[in-house]
Each structure stands twice: as structure tokens, then as C-alpha cells.
Image (cartoon, rainbow, N blue to C red; front, side, top):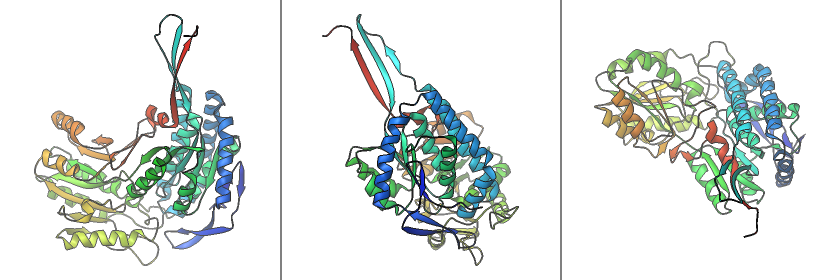
Length: 476
């Protein structure tokens, strides 16, 4: 069920001299050995991507569209195989992994359609002159994807780049390489020209320091933590290389007094524990009107305590392990800090079981602003539930962190909705739903959650340059 792990450079799979283990987080056992790219491998990938760009950028948008759609169809056909690989390496329940495969295919399908609509325009000009605007692919893209969504996160970046006519060097996460392997296989089987899509693995800092300074690289596309994003942005700035950054979040959830308490609490508990809370848009800081706070907490905690935790390959499991062993002490420290500052641990709060990287689904209430978890994204199955006295109080607390990726709110009052839309500082605001984005909507953050957008008609813009052409029929 788990694929043979290799690098993919210039249309060929290759091994390497150095390897690192890939571990199943549910059992802490090795399931594969991942090759680490050498500097020579990276140089080969750079040359291959440069060659691939010259071919792919001159491929007609219709042909690019058709090939991307063929690859997406193969991913759909291979859903079960890909999902099993994802669950083995990342831990999420198999049902969630299957949905991720489809979501990844949908990114490709949407951007494939957009490849046909990278329109320019004609600007009215004086007689004898023509003014036109053209959108052209930016060049070779160095893409860096995280470990929490092994399939859909690489898909988002590859889809935008290929649809725009760019070639790609993808550095996928070492903890969860199989999703990217399966994407590359689908494109190779669909007939993508050599060098257009290249896949490397290795020590992240070594790879970024080697790739980013190269003149061949014209765009850095990254999803990950704010700290790493700033580091990569600094490297890129030294070489005037453009960046697309989707960074950390710490999503607030505003629950007004007119909300359906039981429904919102029930759905909020389920969504918070999705992917063991390892989602950049995960609803984490719940600000609940004090008049409904006690009922909300009771329902939320009851649902969390019913959560079935275990190996994602087991039928009926709702929450798998955290993706690696580093998450356990990080989460423990955040919970202990909150407890020490007077927070109530309503449920959970410690490691779950004796094997694997499991952490109990955890609910904290009455957490003071001085607790680190109010400023630091837990990126795990920990929810914070706090009462607020008014909508103004909730909005103020929602905006009190340096992040602004996603936010949620529940109300049926039109004036509340207007205030939330105008005042909550996020790139993605969802009202009366906990869905954050779709392939056809732009996704990205404000403040320290990054800049640029993936998805929607805005997504391809970052992979293209704008050229103004002034043509005169006479030399002037």
C-alpha cells in the first residue's frame, strides 16, 4: 500500500545516496526510506525545469488544460491507493484521506479550466497605435508544501503553476512524501513533458538555500509556518525573487447569542478535531456570548469526549494521531502553561495511549490572554472556549493575534454580519459555516498569515507576469 519513494527529475525516477526514515505516526514504525537530494540532484532539477519551461510555456492553453485534466482523472481513479498511503504516513482517518484526494483533483480541474482564461486586454489608443496587455508565465517555480495535507497542498501549487505555463521544482514534506509521489506519477502517466514537474526531498533549509538564490527560479510558493515563511521571504528578497506565502493561522470563531447553540457546538467540536487539529484554518479560539456559554461548553465537551481516537486505517476512527513526535511535547507545554495561568481543562490535556503520536482531544475554557495558546497556534486537537460580553468584545479578541488566515462566525443578524465582514481581520471569513475555501475561491491571509492568493481567478495571477505592448505603425 505504501509507494516506493524516489526523486523525480527530468522525467525519470532516481535514488539518492542519503535516506531518512518515514514513520507511521499511529505505530511509530518505519514504513519507508526517503531519498535526500544532493546538490548535484538539485542542479539537475534546475536545468530540467529550465528546459521544461521552454516546452511547457509554448504549449497551447488547450493542450495544457487537457493534460492536467487527464492527470486529475487518474488521481480520482487511484483514490483508494493514494488515500491509504496518506493515512499510513500522516495518520488521518482513511475517510478524510479519501476526501483529500478528491479535493486535490478538484484543484487541478479548476485551474485547468482557468488555463483557458488568462485573458489580456486591448486599451484604446491613438490612430496608428495599438496598446495591448499580455499575461505570460513567470518561469520556473520552486514550491514548498507542508506535511499536514500530503495531497491537496502540493496540488494547490502544482495546479496553479502548470495551468499558467510554468515548470515546477516541488520540495514536498519529508514526513509525508507519498501524496506528492502519487501526483507526479499521475502527470507522468498523463504524458507531461520531461522537466516540467520535478520532485525533490531533503533537509528543508539546505534545499531552500540552494534553490532560492538561483536565477532560474522566478517564484517561491510556500505553505507553512510564519517563522519559516519569513526566512524564505528574506532569502528571496536578496535576489528580487517573487514569493507567494500561505502562512500560519489561529482562527477565531465568534458565536453570537442568536446562534443555534447545540448545532454550532456539535459541528465545531467535529471540525476542530479534523486532521487532529493540524489545519491552518482550524477553528481554535471560540468566543461565545456569555448568555449561551455554559450550554455551548457542555455540548462541545460531550461531543469531544465521544470522539473515537485511533489508527486511521481502522473503520470508525474519527481522529488519528498527530503527524510526528514533536507535536506531543509542544501541545503538552501549551496546555500546561494555560493550566498554570488559571485555565480550566474541561477534557483531555495529555498524551493518549502508550504507542504512536496520539494526543487527547482537549478543551480549555476561561483561558486568560496571558496564556501562550492565545497567541500561539496549537496546530493540534486543542480548542479554546472563552465567554465574551458583546460582539465588539468578540471582534476585539478575534483580532488580538498577529495572524489573519481564516475566521468564522455564527449569527443571523444582518447588522452583525455587516460588522463581522468589515471588522474581522482575516483573508477568509465564513459565516454560519466552518468551510474555509473551495478551488474556485481565493485563499490566503493577511497580517502575519502571508500574502498572495491560491485558488479562484486570483490564484493564477501570481504565476504570471503582466506585459504591456505599445505598437506603432510608424516609427516615432
